Length: 253
Image (cartoon, rainbow, N blue to C red):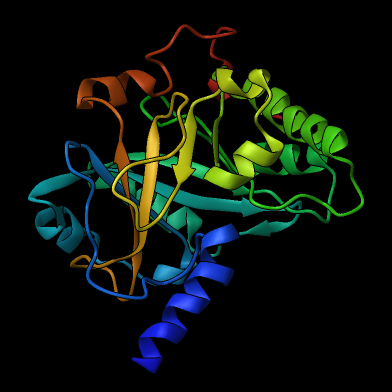
């Protein structure tokens, strides 16, 4: 009884208000109902992945894994050590792949955008580039922060010729990225341990748990769903949209 009360206290006062990267306090992973297009996101934290095992036996709710989001860069000078291998293997084993950048509060947005572009060569059939933004620099006002995020998005969009995807959690978007200008970008929302998303706007991806388990991956992995059909997912990829510039996705810096 005391343990249950303590767990509720920790969740209610510390986890629920602001957190989303917390392990489940109870029960098994519960996948949202009504969605058939499942995917995962990975980084070096998943270690060396057995891609053949993942392709042949990796299933979520009896549905195959359709897409893999892969961490590429962070800030202005950090490349995920497993990015190159993960990015190549995801394509080789037939997954729709994407690459994301973790936004740092320690370097300018423009420098970060150029670093991502320098290290990530997206191809036709890949998902648009992703900006993972979860923190606001303490030395920036909210308006300055929003302008910085837009600068990253603008530079990356110009280079690849598609609108980047914004990844963040529900409360962060509502507090810092709720301006209408951000609604033009595909939204990937992190909202854990709920049956449905509280966000009322349009969204493309939902990261619904960080404690998934799959053959071929040691330890936990994030589970995601796509809000649409497989055809819709493929239509989102580079080369399936109206480009901003000719062959914009393949430009060199």
